[in-house]
Length: 322
Image (cartoon, rainbow, N blue to C red; front, side):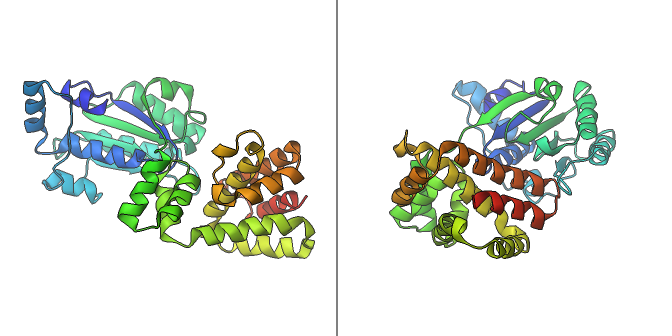
């Protein structure tokens, strides 16, 4: 779709890339910036138009523009990321000020907004005004999991491209061929990654399955453990925030699996411990499974909003112990 737009000189001024974390949205945005400014682009476009073949463009990776974009030093590449859990209006205003100046490079400027769903209301409205009257030779790429937390007026001004999850077999094959994993280990990691290459790589590069097993065993035992243990465990988790994203993924996958296994056992993620999943499902009513899953999501959202980690995790573990 993007190659067609480049060949026909109809690349929209605003794009929205949505999809699961780790499926290539940011990678595609940077490659689009490289291709659009690559010194070899015109030769490729001429070849495509002459041959009338299906477009297949690629940056050379070696010219000055390609190298500077890859290194993040190109003056016409503007990357916007959250700070403190949000993207605030001052960041959007600063970019707008930069875009008002004439480009020294004479290239196509790119503004890539990662985690665009984390723009606060003021930042979203400021970006909307820019999109309504976009600067010349400037492409905006917004990256978000979905459109739910974006202003509808912003979504309506973007060409929306959905990035689908990567098939499980492709992920497993990649882990075997590029990471040297055993096929069984690769298949488990690919299943739990839910179509995300970033998650699959993380699971393949660490002793992630053993860690998953530890967390699952703890969940099974949690109702029998004293409250003092839960408080101590919450404190330990709060002190190791770098591991929380992985723990939240384990918890969400677990409760999702024990909810669906009675009706669709072939679709569970933790298929290598299916027996444990089925046993847990028999012991817990669906209403309680949903309540516990909601508790995990609430804790994750609270931490993203800079809530007190110790209190948020303590509340979550108290619910999970029921």
